[in-house]
Length: 149
Image (tube, rainbow, N blue to C red; front, side, top):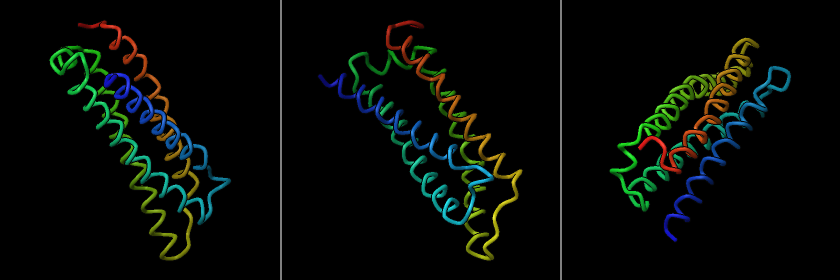
């Protein structure tokens, strides 16, 4: 029963991550950007980082408390592929986080909005992150069925 609950929490965390990343990509548009949207992007970004941590923690819990055991997981190259994709995505999230924080400071200081090219760049990075995350479940389903070991 524990394995089913661990899988449920991990999958739910991944779905939550995708929802918040998709919401961020959806509202990060030049034509929609105003002070309210900048604040909403900052809030979504904070939630996205929390969701990212929950995905990582729920995955680690699954590795160590799951029925296959940590040795099985860590010896499988598909786990390393999943972690590499996950970490690449997390590293890519840093740029948009920093830019959104800068936008927030500029809005507070003088009410200025970011230039259109910056908004488009952040949206592009968030879209790439979201699409990269979509590859991770492919490795996950093969990992869950014992491939790679």
